[in-house]
Image 1 (cartoon, rainbow, N blue to C red):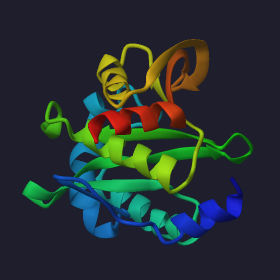
Image 2: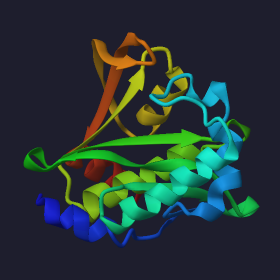
Image 3: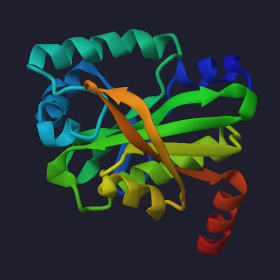
Length: 196
């Protein structure tokens, strides 16, 4: 896969839909919805970033993303839960490895919407986009050890747990163990055939 394709696709981020969700670019208008969960320590406990200190921080972050989208250098969607017309989290690609035709995905969800299958639904749609539109060979996801909820989402979408990378990331002052799950295009195709 060529970098030019990534820039071309993501500089005009396509809108994705599922039964209950719309995945679209993040906008400054999402400030209130994002801040609602991004300010919470229970959300960021297993993430690489700290809670947003105030709404102005969230608004400036979303402004900054507008430039990143325009440059085709940001690959994350806002997750809109249509029954409530509300942004409840994000889901998308965190990085691409062009030479290996692979990518890493990530997601975060407002705790008020945990337990509804929303993360699974959003991640499934992103995987579909990755394999069918981006023609990726492998997609992986990582989680900080202890974040069993996130690992369950990965396994629900068909990812295989590959193991723990010992103290592989330095996050918030500590070297932490990182779990890795992945799915290959051949495995995705097999799952799709079973659901047809």
